[in-house]
Length: 348
Image (cartoon, rainbow, N blue to C red; front, side, top):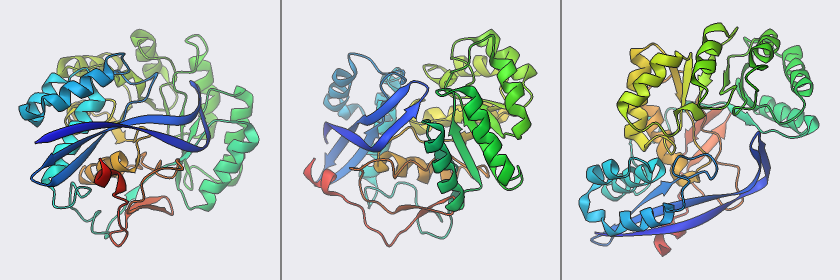
């Protein structure tokens, strides 16, 4: 078996804002396996400035992984504990190599186009007029659940945007999730949650920065509506560490991004613990290309979650790979009649 790694820069169609800044491009890496004339591909979806494995030796570790591919998937996964995005890429690449079709990893009613996955519509941060435009587009596109990034513009303007949605749509018609990406100061967080509460929100992701365990625990205890941990899960590699975090904070929900938390195996560990402690969860992509998004979507379908998932990011880039994934009326479908653009894999 031969393994190679390849860097790829994804270009955003338009600058996309979070509380951590504006993104115009997104770096990703692919591991390609080749054996007996057959190829498999896995995406290592690192997000600079956020991933636990955003380290100077990242490419060096990719090189080591390819040089030691003979160790096999399990041994490599365990050796890559501090590199969750490479763990995910390895899982995906081995599955891809073993599959008859390198992009069909988990055959199901999803991949045969008979069932879909309900997803939320993502509204990026920006000027109030731009956010309002996105909200109107998502509602027109038939989404019943939208997720707003908040925390970058004036808080009163964000409240006005929520007021705009609720003046037209009740909580029964549109579920609203908000994601603060840790933007609230510790001393203002509860007050802001109380102000947000009147809009009957489903939940808020990561209201304060990760690592403030005691403050987050208190917020989850006193919040008027549910809190979901997101960044808080990044960098916790052991099963014991994961369980300790959930026991300490007792969140209402956790958000699971396979590229950030050790791929399918790491995600499954979090799901098992969340179910044990009666904590809700859903799965989201982390701005991967369609290759990574496809793998996450196929696996997510098999988890049988009834909640809207965060998998609607396939249309963000100008140079993504054409694939069977389609978003229609707030649902992600796998159109088995559409072909993959396999030019990248062919050349790799």
